[in-house]
Length: 268
Length: 297
Image (cartoon, chains in turn brown, orange):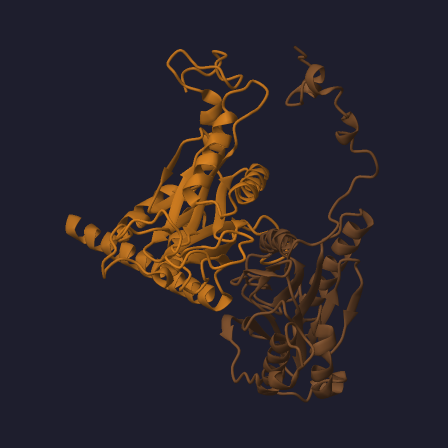
């Protein structure tokens, strides 16, 4: 009998002929993540005069399968910032744990910091965005990207509302309104109608901003096949973060669907 | 100490013939000379307090904190050699972080006390090390809620987390004290350092063990903690000191389950109360003394 470990579990050479060991060689470069597996769709966010509103639905898809309908994709950081995750859910979990560690480290330095969102020396949303941008860019350069696009909302060092995005390549933007994934095509134009510039955004009230975000979530549910009608919405203000994680889309009207032709099994 | 000079106190890991480890006893002496720290466990939370003796006018006020945060829900205060305490806290943070990495859930106060007790005890076993010159008080509030597993994305089963027993209380405030020997017990009130005798006497007067009406609330405990530090400081009145206090409440309390510094307003109020009470005590003492003298006459 052949006792070499390489032969364990293989067909016997004397019966089946020599085994083709080229299958066992992993020649070529090391391959890390090549594609996301379980994914979350768009995250959308918009500034208003006293803060930022962000929303994302509660679905994690496995390809086109609506696999997990109860997934929270908005995460609060130090009671003062919100991070919205689209893209790979396992990478989101990794980042979430990492951010938890980071927030505990912050409390080491200053046991009172968790109480005051805009306390001096406290890691704010602008700091957090820069940190995540460096992290994602580093992982891209290692050819092992974290397959996410993130929106970060909160306040900057001057206590002004702050909103920025960073993607799996480390590219970052800031804008009065931002959307990831399908949302950048479907929701962004609607949000720009109300907050084209910083000045426009600074005129919006909280109620208006929430209303626009809800409208965008509805449009996304109508047109994005990887979306869900249950969603989370977060409002970041100077007083902290109000996060609602089990909202239902209201006032849906599918009347427009009657007029759509040319898909699926329709013959006319 | 009769055995001084007999050679049994020269190294760790050597017993004296009468079964003592002198190095550990000397470490406890180091603690007894350190500034006072106390911990109170009341029905709705934990208060940690430290007397910070001001060794120099050049030190910034309120800087150089003596009470450390270990995890969101855990704090440590210690008396004795401060660098030893700093290392102890570092290790506690590593343990808490490691627990989170492994189990995806915060470490319980009991588990942390166990880990840290084991760590202290290991420093009584080897020739190459000396015991820690500190006694540490570990306070924590284990969440009574179904805490989400870290990185958990869904809500989990609608019936909640498993492993719960009907009618049994889960989580709550916990307080432990770890000594240089590695010995640790859970306490309702713990005190260590120079003023520990006076502090313990005061702690024993408080109602900490019952859950009833008369038992201390967290706010009362903050005031009592301040008073006890002031009482314990009485012996060396000439030295200036700062009072440092942190607290931990449950999820529905003022700190939302986190270890935080007591807000300045409340601390000031507690200090005023402490000053008033200690002044009253002294007056009463003097009155009774005078009365006693008269009786003798």
